[in-house]
Amino acid sequence: NAGVTQTPKFQVLKTGQSMTLQCAQDMNHEYMSWYRQDPGMGLRLIHYSVGAGITDQGEVPNGYNVSRSTTEDFPLRLLSAAPSQTSVYFCASSSTADSYEQYFGPGTRLTVT
Amino acid sequence: GNSVTQMEGPVTLSEEAFLTINCTYTATGYPSLFWYVQYPGEGLQLLLKATKADDKGSNKGFEATYRKETTSFHLEKGSVQVSDSAVYFCALRTSYGKLTFGQGTILTVHP
Image (cartoon, rainbow over all chains, first blue to last red; front, side):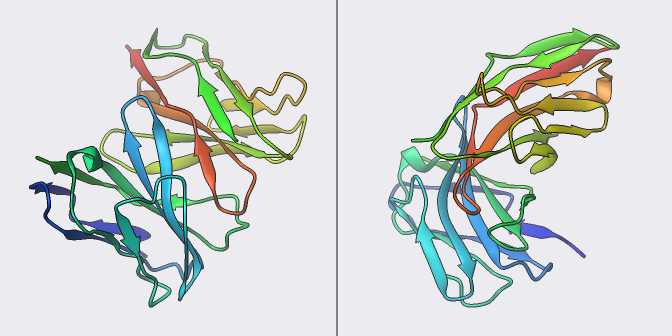
């Protein structure tokens, strides 16, 4: 049982490049979400999904796309990276949207130059 | 909208000292309240929670009480250890799944 896994751990992009941050969970959780963590601002919700085929926007969705084709995977796509997207990205999952405990992955540190 | 405010950090303590990290919130409805902890290089882990007013969450010697009258959820521990050094986040949830986090408080405990 690996829990929530994220790849890559570190990534450097140039402005305008695109990439996908991968997130997978092996706990058969319905609910998955992406957060970004910036210094002095805590974590902010980017997108979330309550089940395969269902996604919705969080607090800061601009510049990011998501899809949920399977229960296990919830990739986050940056279409055209900008320096403002330099951050640490965390994926999280929980059994259902109503579950109190969310399980977080180890994070991806992204730098956009 | 919802918001969470934590005390400014960083906090530096000696081992066995008493810890308080203040957290206040603004929310519509009746939120559930959480403390998450992030150890160096890791993701966040749920430390404790409280789902209604006057509930006390506790885990690993940490405690926090849901105070609706003061909209607070302060984290306390009677005797901290070096292994408690981490970043602590207060958070609330009103809508299903959507957590609103405070800015985090860095705690460093010296031997």
